[in-house]
Length: 289
Image (cartoon, rainbow, N blue to C red):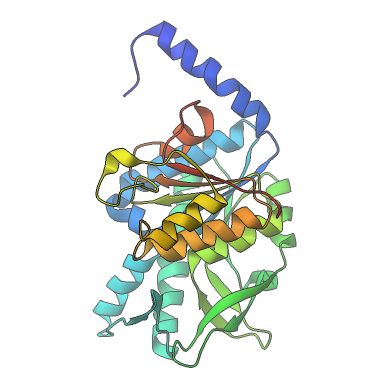
């Protein structure tokens, strides 16, 4: 809610100024999860508003997205039953086509269109375009599921420098040219490292990392790599958060100085994290190791 107090509104703007200066011309990678798309119209509008503002004050946002719920919905309509191994989607040829259709036919154009409505020029692409993300298959059991081995980020860099917001679907490409389904969190982390991003922000449907699993009041606002590893070993990070946090740690130890896990279902949480002193969610402090 916008306050009617003009003095408070002025203080809010002044508070944002140092952050605008600090991140001017800096690349900020935003991982937008399919789970945040629960209320698609409102969620996309708020994302687009936030990213358009970032771009207008000189930041260089890059969006990476998956689309798990959208893939599941399309698979169900086509009579396919999803299955998972260690949190990764088993992807045979039929499921790979579903993944491709959901990401490139539904989620990606929806984000690009929403950004355009807010006046932010955007281009949709995937890791297969210009061989952006070279990947190899993880295992025979998982089928067409890959992990990124190399990022050729030139196409993304050129778009960013042209003032365009790249919207990247988490598909990789094999050396021989075949598509592979890549975990979007890992994809975002690899791309953030390759781009030398100042920040990597995961928009999730959880508040951040908790000291006590069942206590939302135990939010950890700031943590180092060692502390996050302690949380994993102690069982405070569980289930689907484990691969997400592992990706965050990969970015933090790969040179990204600040990695954030925030609740993307909170209106304008992206701006609250970027432009306010308190921020939201959990910030993992990294840097080269």
